[in-house]
Amino acid sequence: MIMRRIFGFLFLLSITACSERTQTTSTTIIDEAANTTDTINNETSFTASNPYGFDTSYEISTKHQPFMLTGFFNPDDILDTAILIRHKSKGKDALFIKHGRTSQTYLLKNGKDVGSEYEDFNWVGEFLVTKKGTKVWNNIVNDEIAGEEQVPENKKFILKTDGIFVHADEASGGGIIYFKNKKYAWVQQE
Image 1 (cartoon, one colour):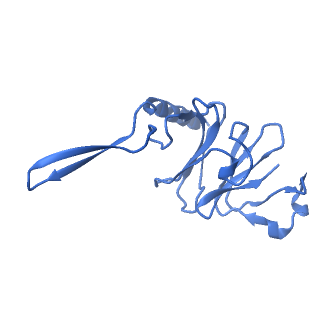
Image 2 (tube, rainbow, N blue to C red; image 1 turned 45 degrees about the horizontal axis):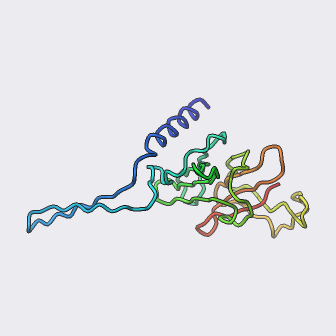
Image 3 (cartoon, rainbow, N blue to C red; image 1 turned 30 degrees about the vertical axis):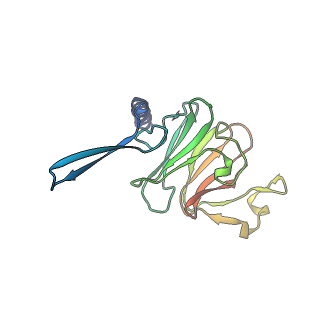
């Protein structure tokens, strides 16, 4: 637990230290016949980026504890990272997911990004990993909370990857975000 907090602090510190850098790529062209070198600077995006992939208009959300999870969120069996981040000027929280050893990143800003209906991730109180192999189902049936025995078997499924459980503290409302068909999806869990 102490090592995780130290890692989290160092991670946050490194992001903060790098947050003011703009991302520019330089391409060096060497013409051996003419014996010249040209350098071309290309702006890769309008917003600056930090080394973790999300632009510097976002920062780590210190409101959430934990703010970061690791799990096997896609099916490649390489550890991935999910981080709750906050837009600096809008104050809206988002979920940034980085697939390990790849350049694949996902910025989930609201429920529409996963097939649900919420404006942002500010409401998240519980932020946990739901393990691969867990049987899940949408537990709202006819606007009522339904137990496992009340949900038909054909509406249940086994998570093929780890999921990200997000839920409101001391209230009903939440779900599991999981990887399906090369994007993230939602299953309601009250």
